[in-house]
Structures are given as C-alpha cells and as structure tokens.
Length: 75
Image 1: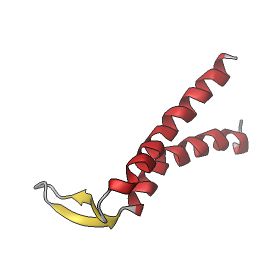
Image 2 (image 1 turned 90 degrees about the vertical axis):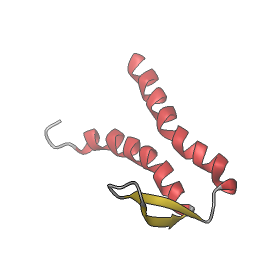
Image 3 (image 1 turned 135 degrees about the horizontal axis):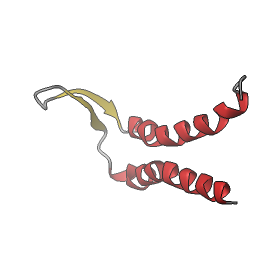
Image 4 (image 1 turned 45 degrees about the horizontal axis):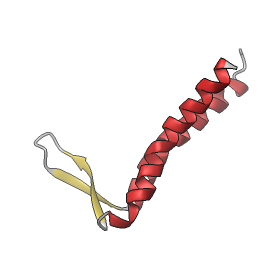
C-alpha cells in the first residue's frame, strides 16, 4: 500500500511542470529562449511549443522509469 502511495506522489510531481506550462501557455511569447552561453547571452530560441516538450519531459521520464523494470531481463 505504501509503495502505491509513493507512485501516485511521483506521478503528481511529474505532471506538475506540464500542468503549469499548460496554464501559462496562452501568455507565453511566440519565441522563448532555450539556451544561454557561458556569458549569459541567449544563443538559441524556440517556439512556445518547445515549452510543452520541456514541461512534458518529467512526465515522460516518470513513465519510462515505471516501465523499464518490467522489461529488465535480470529482474
């Protein structure tokens, strides 16, 4: 039972960045900075849809970590 509760907490924490991105999506500018160099200058821009990918990254990683032990050949 305790293990199931931890899984639910992990999924909620993983979904929070995507939920925040979806809430803020309408007010994001068309171009957002994606990368800064050593001097702190922006050297790469992306569309605001790239923010969705970044927000969904934690959810995808949680899904991957949930699935990988099931296909582990050494268990």
